[in-house]
Image (tube, rainbow, N blue to C red; front, side, top):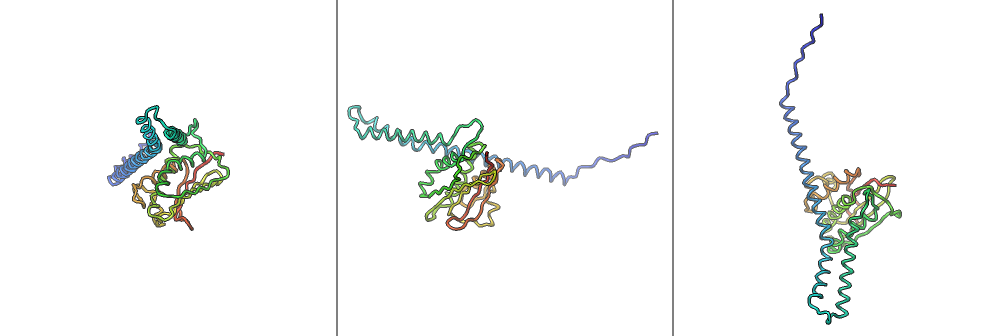
Amino acid sequence: MSKRKKYIPKPRHNPEIQARKIENNRIELQNVLKAVDALTISHDNHISYLGNFARHDIKNSIQSMDSILSTTDANDITEENILSLKTNLKVIRETIDNFSKLVPYSKDEKFEIKNLIIAVELLTRNDLYNNNIKLIKELPKDINIYLNLPFQSVLQMFNNLFINAIKSLENINNPTIKLFAHINENSLTIEILDNGKKIDEKEYDKIFEFGFSTTGGSGIGLYHAKYLCELFKGKIEIKASDGLFTKAFLVHLPIIK
């Protein structure tokens, strides 16, 4: 005769546990939506920077050329007019050439560090010039270092860091940004230093949080930069700096040897 199995009642749902699960899911969903909003805004800002880069110079050159061609008859064109047309045409060509450096083509998403540095400098040149900011660059002797990452996303990450540095330099005497790159084993470290407004070291843990800002900004740029860096299996951090500079943002990324 078979033994009867001992009856074990099914556990009842604990309302408190279920409530906590629901609340945790709600918080997780809010964080996901917050991240999506941040990425969308940051991406839109990056697209705007790319558009403004070419539009300003090309628009001015076309207007200058149009003013000559629409008000001057063929028989009245002077050597000065021809020189002006050639100069503006040269500006348009150079602008298009520079814009191509912001979108280097590669089937495998591999690019050289020097292309990234050129693109960052081109993208922020107007902000640097308009604010009289000095840019210092110290790059490795072996500049032919490659990253196997999506170029525009990496450019966007560093552009966010540069924008943050530029904002912190408002009302600062001799505003300066230093870009310092060096190699450590299988990773590349790029430091962005500035002599702008100091950040209390107590706020270092919060500096990459969504909505937190020490420059009066949206608090999205650094949040997005950290998100992208970790997506690339890298690391981003902030440290105090001695001497001329007040702080340094360090970005560590894997490289291809």
